[in-house]
Length: 108
Image 1 (cartoon, rainbow, N blue to C red):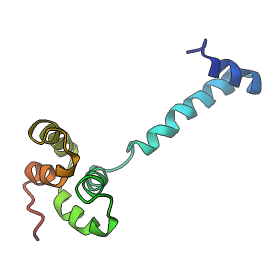
Image 2 (cartoon, rainbow, N blue to C red; image 1 turned 45 degrees about the vertical axis):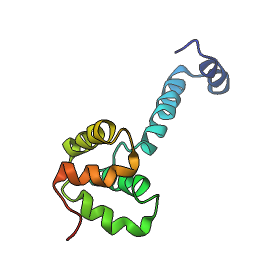
Image 3 (spheres, rainbow, N blue to C red; image 1 turned 60 degrees about the vertical axis):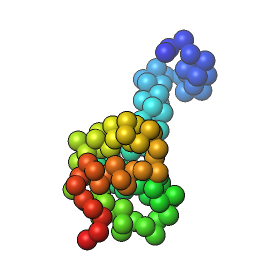
Image 4 (cartoon, rainbow, N blue to C red; image 1 turned 30 degrees about the horizontal axis):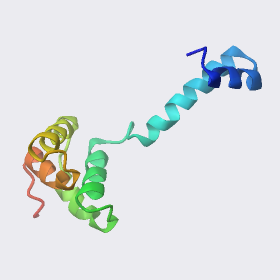
């Protein structure tokens, strides 16, 4: 990692190795924030259902919340398996996977 061009470039700019390690740590952490780290399982499920099944239509957030009610990390893993296995990776079936894994019908 220390032989990388990025490291040498940033080291020339900032100079101090401690500053460099801090900067590289920040550069590695910032993208992880947009990858869903720190989001609740409910938010992750709703994002997946809205983006997949509802084509990004935020007006369907209430429906996504009903489908994802009671979701936890185990349900998210179940959804991954159902989508990849039963639904052949079709993310458009995310709501159906959530309903199968939570037992929710989405009709409350």
